[in-house]
Structures are given as C-alpha cells and as structure tokens.
Length: 441
Ligand code: PMP
Image (tube, rainbow, N blue to C red):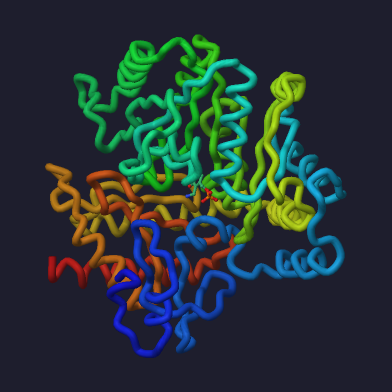
C-alpha cells in the first residue's frame, strides 16, 4: 500500500495524507510502528514483527542496542554538537579505530552524516586528485539520492531529474545469474563482460576518467555479488587508466558479510572507501576513508566539503561505539556463523520451492531471486509481492531489491545480533509464505 491506499482505522493515515510529501518507490507498511528493540519492531497493537531488513540495512546491531542507547544519552547531555571547525575526541578516536580495522594505506578519515553525502565527498576528492571528471559505475548501482551520487545511481529512476552531472558512464553489472556473457560451457564469462564494458567506456570517454564507484556486493540493485576475482580485474582496469577505485560499503561494511569489509573477500584495496548505514547502527553517521597520499594532494588543492554535521561529536561517538562493539563481539565471525545457518536454510527452501531461482550473497547479506520458471528465469514480481505480504501477515518484514525489470529479489539481512531461534523463526515464516503464495499465483 501507499499512503494513498492504506485503509484508515483512525486519523493517523488521513493526517499523513494531508501533510506528508510522498517519496520513493516502496509505499508504506500499513501499520503504525511504535517501538523497536533488538530484531523486532512493534506496531500499535503490540504485535512483534521480525525485522529482516535491519531497518533497511542500518540497524546492524539490532534496534536500540544498549551500548548505542548509552552513547547517545551520554553524548547528547555532554557533547552534543559543535561548530564544524572544532575538534573533539570521539572524531579522532573513531578515525583511529576505523584505521585499525583497515589495510594500512586507508588511514585518513572524514566523518559525515549520510551515505549519499559520503559519496559526494568521495567523488569530489577523486575529481580533485585526478584533475578529471568522468565517473563510471555499474548499471544496477545505488549510491544515493544527492546530485553526484544520484548521477552515479542507475538502479532507481533517473528520468525527470536532468541534466544529471555530466560525464557519468556505466558498464553492465556482473550478474552471474542473468548475464548474457557466457563461455562455451555456459558459465559466466565475467572477464569478457568487463573487457566489453571498458571498451565501451573508452569509446564514450572524453579522456577524463576520474574514478569507478562500486558496491562490492550490489544491494538495492538486486543483491548481486560480483564473481570472485572480478574486483582484482576491475582494479587493473582502473590502474591502467589512472582512475581511482571508490568502494561504497554502505550496506556491506562492518562485518555484515562475514568479513570486516566486503572488499577484503575480493582481495583488493580501494583508493577511497565510503561507509554509512551500518556505521551508525540506526543513526545518521557516515565516513570517507582514504590514503595519506590522496588526502595530502586534495588538501594541497584546498579540498572543500563541509556540512553542518561534519566531524559531529555525537555521530562520531556512535560510530566509535559501533566499531568497538563489533571488535569486542568478534561480529565478523558471528556473521559468518549465522550467515552459514541462514544460507543453509535458504538453500533448503530452494530445494522445496520451485519459484526460488537463485540464492546468493555472503554472511548475513543474502538474496533470494524468485522466478516463474527456473528455465526461462521469468521474473516473479506479483509472486514476490504476495510472498512479502504473506510474510508480513505472519510477523516477518522482508523487502524487495529494486532491479529494473526484475522486482522479485528478496533482500535478507537481519541484524548481526539475531539469535538462532529468531533466524529459524524467520525462515519458517518464509517457508509458509512461499507455500501460501504459490496456491494463488
Ligand atoms: N550507497 C549505498 C550502497 C546505499 O545502499 C545507500 C542507501 N540505500 C546509499 C549509498 C545512500 O545512503 P543514504 O540513504 O544514507 O544517503
């Protein structure tokens, strides 16, 4: 339902219709959510709903994690917000703590508020450092709704907002399930796909390639993990052209995929890393991390990126608590262990439900692609909607990744703090929802 179609039981939705700006593609869940704690959100009737979206990927430690609550309460009372030219300890401590989790060359950090903003800053840095302006991305990317990040975003609507930032180019997303690039034995020929993509980039470029911006596992655009080895080959393409590699780990960063960062699994190191959603564990906190060298050159060229909340002490304190909690709880290992359990459950569902075409992902970041027929891979959009509705009725919230033309990919990403019991409950609800929806569609 959208805000226009929710059946009203009290004045809430009527007031919402009168006073809210409508946005985004997804519509609203037809319940008033009053409380959130751990892996659950609670509606106005006290009904518990398991949140397998982690508040759409941000509530990494579950809702209202005690350490985060304590940090916010303490910070708001003692060091809430400062003039952007004043420094405080949480900012410096978070920059140091992040660098301790990263390869040595990623040593310099800037703290901001949102993912879109962190990518704006990263793109500006790449332009200033290279003296060039063209930005290449995947054709199912999502990097934000702001200007430059939005211009490098292709998974959601671009029409109606022109002119976008000039000099944005794309290559096809290496989607092993659907790619048309195949070797003679039918496997995904991702190297040919990458070579073809860069041949097109080279033809279109005006000789000003600044950077490639990529999610290491595409989230919003369909939960698509590029094949092993892909990023090393992509890194090589960037190096050959003097382009920087920006990796956007808004959804994947900070243990979600079973590694601290998803780029580690691909064996590459980005020139610029952006972190957001997961860094704030539900609050607006983001970061841009880069090398001494890039930072020095940008600073020499008078890098300008300032916001009201740059180096915000409260945001930094929250980020620091998140990083420390993840280190102390060894949550990379937790995400591997719970991710294995989730994946085993999903593969087992695939054996019994013929509408599950593909299960993919890493750690607690899994996608389930629903199809009408495994041979033709025809998208099962209405079926997907019926499955998520049946899940919601039974107390599980799942959302659908927005890939153009395919609206039937379930994104399954519960908080890292989820118990085995809640994970199994979610899987059992999904099992039942698949059975119920199959009877009607
Ligand atoms: N990058 C990625 C990979 C994202 O998934 C998102 C949000 N969906 C963003 C950037 C934008 O973050 P924000 O909404 O905080 O601006």
